[in-house]
Length: 259
Image (tube, rainbow, N blue to C red; front, side):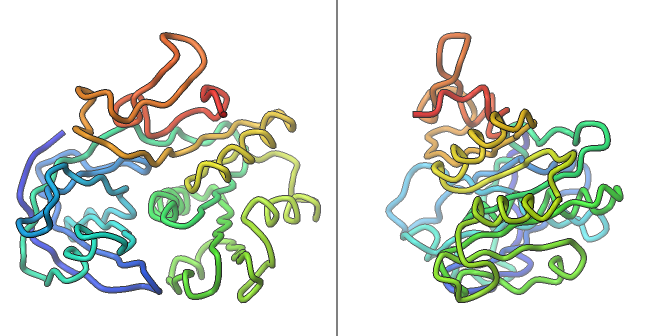
């Protein structure tokens, strides 16, 4: 974990409510890995005191830049959306555990729902560089919440919208069932980030089909370094709880005591 100030390189909307921000990454630091996150100190004037966590959505070692995808929905993210290139932010990174490597010859199936798209984009880019033939299933409420990215031209992508305004008509889980019903269910491994109901449904499906499933949990955090216990979730074993910021945010879906 490093604590540093870094300039904003790029900051722009990618679809309704969602923005992408690129930040300088000091080349002397260890690079972030897919699944890890950073925290940003809220700038003065936002009325917020606690640092805000954001999943890393890409890392470019040649340009020494990282990227986050964020949703504009409160005072802090509204302030971030108004920031200009050249302004600096106070960063703690990289934080948390990363996604594991796919098991053996299993084909990685990535599911992203809502703001969960960020870490899945990073994982997809990483897997593409290793010729693992991943599949990306991206779900949203409607077409306005789906970005158009060059990544979609490089990876097998299934878009799913609840209202059918773009791609598959249904949820990302519905799209997964349809994908597998077409004969794509032989040897796969799941990686996902999104709303808890989506992750729980995927965990149930993975257990029923005896497949590995790794989930990235989004949780409100206080310190994000394991001290405050403000981000715990119920798990099987141990003392019954795990800190998302340090034991996670990546978990084997069968570790979590879903409620």
